[in-house]
Image (cartoon, rainbow over all chains, first blue to last red; front, side):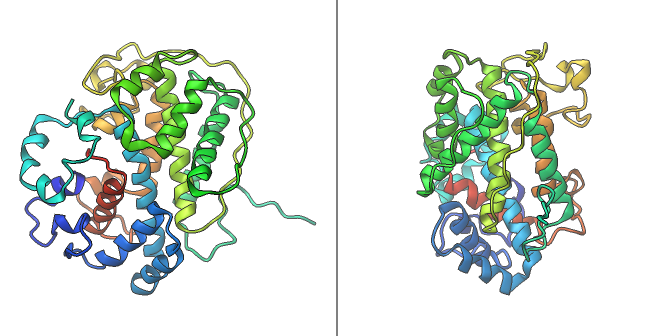
Length: 115
Length: 241
């Protein structure tokens, strides 16, 4: 829900692009960054290839920055779901308008956050 | 003559790893090896080793082996669950783990701190196809077992400490902020885990300057690019929060 909250009012970002590959996120180089993220988190065989696409499009510093962001959120999700962090009432209410599009209401961890 | 590199030297890679990231990783290994509040240094290394075993199991890689100290069965189970079966972590599971032999809620939070911070450093290496850094030697000693006096139920499963309730020795953990972000507060039953989290968060993702809206000059990805990646990683982990 992080991107949803921070991008409200920014029409250039299409939230649905974060979870659906067929939707353009509107973020520059978003497609290659997502492909690299998918390969790193999913442990797929095309990790080196996906990383090289980012390298070609954006340069090696961007590869490192993206790897660091992936690493950070591999940590944060485990804290959130490992502690059952609640969603505050304002975020709960305001997120209703874009949660359906993101199809995240089906995540089992919703039960932890809404408990 | 054999030359031994310092930890996290990044001399054998062409990827331009920032020195501030390398420094944060070195501090992480110092914090990992340190005597804990609820676990010995050797047990903390074993928790880290177990997280690597869990990851290797998922990835179909050879077992890297256990750490130097034996862990309670519930602790080993918890490490594997947090690494390999996150979408199925539940309140019932948390209650079961934190009431098992050798475990308390404070043990769990310190364990979680070790697991997630070591996992994060390791994931950075995996994303760049760099070898994992060897785990450090533990520092000897007996855990202090001091529980923050202001820990109270605030909605997360473990009790948490809000800024107004911090003990004198922990006043730094929220950087003087009057309100603590939920993710940081969630770890506050073990204040050193909050410090560790903040240090890596700053190095890997977002500094306090950037939270205020400015972009640090050393950052390459824009804030929307970073948050796009963040949202995708969260979705892949089926993390609703």
